[in-house]
Length: 161
Image (tube, rainbow, N blue to C red; front, side):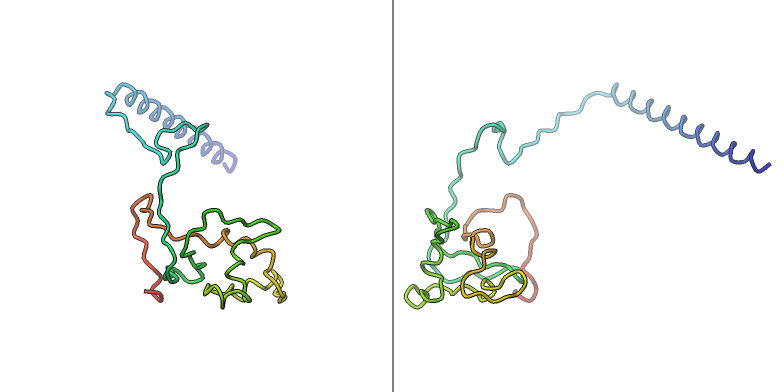
């Protein structure tokens, strides 16, 4: 009797599976016969430009030379409050350090580079910017008046409101 029950259960499972497949096939066939509704037209951010072509850049005005902007979340890297057009950051030269290096901030009036930028991954203090923090624009971006790409309900962190 014990060997009969598992066989019956397997046969029942096969029967249920077969019935489900027949039902799905009938449902798909009736959907194919149904009149087509209006096609959905999707518009991507590329605006229909083929993938092998570039879109022309849109004009985005950067905020120019004013105080630091408020941050929207804890640990947010500060935004850059000036234009960075033409700034060069290579392994041998970093234009940002012309103003933001500690020894140059008194003359330039710029914000000093944070002490966190002088620590290695292991926490060792260096006497110069850590290589992992050298390329400023990996984290810091210029302020801009660009509108959001999509509507959203983002709100600043409660402690920063």
